[in-house]
Image (cartoon, rainbow, N blue to C red; front, side, top):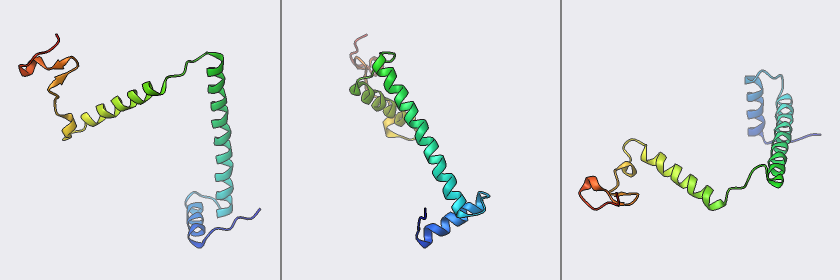
Length: 108
């Protein structure tokens, strides 16, 4: 099989082949394609296994809204922990309402 690349891509392949110790760009492309197929087979096996786990009841699916809330909270926490971030400023509201340490009503 023959594959034709544009001059820029061919140059990049030749340079990368030389940098990675391969004799030719053809050898590099063959290695890349073989690696891709190996990775694809591993991914397919993992997905099949996870699907089987779901179907058998070994694991339970997590509702989408719970996943969304988890990642939204995780993202917000990461933004708060960044130095110099306005989102890291203390809130005047706690989980039950305004914070007691600010001299306003709280639930506790």
